[in-house]
Length: 281
Image (tube, rainbow, N blue to C red; front, side, top):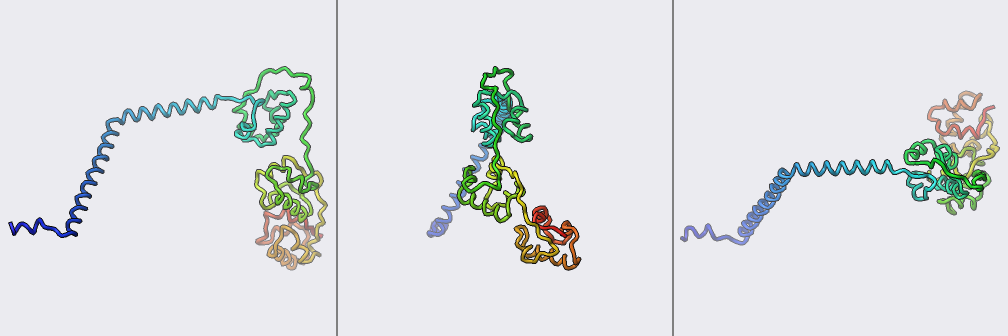
């Protein structure tokens, strides 16, 4: 017995080792039990699961078809529906003004004429619309809808711009300052150069403003203008101005302003705007 006793007597460290080993074995048994049970469950119920997935897919297709079949009468579009369909608030407002006068929109062409939606959006909307076939018009329907009155982009002040949703005190002042720096807007796309104006706000401005009269910009003669004068052009930085003058020195005289497009490393993407302020004589 004394010879066997050392095999059954352990110190604290050995007892801990035996305990951890037994715990690890128990954990392995538990993991194996659940994993094997899961596989067995899947194997036994595989046909039922496949049938259920097939049923779910068919129900999804039915819902999709029902959504396609759900058509909207454009005469009753709400702000929320119009927004969901991709229309701007200005397009929705034009339709609401038209309906407010007791009129009914009866065709795709008439809808586009009233709302001024783009051709691409109209293609999408046509699939969701169902126009009424007949509707009696009242005496009030004979009145014509007043056309949208656009304001002059180059005459608007900060108060005018603040009427546009999304344009506050800072942005309105920034638009006016940049317009002054340009000498006036020549292209509507120059609004994209105003820092802080996102595409949605720019579209809202374009829906209310036009350039009725382009500014009379004083064009500098590239062959006589000084370096400082050319550098003052909004679209030219020091490096681009330096390239122009190096080219002018090499050819002695620039006969046509389009020659600057041939200058290596010249900012071609800004050429259309730069030539608003330069000429060659």
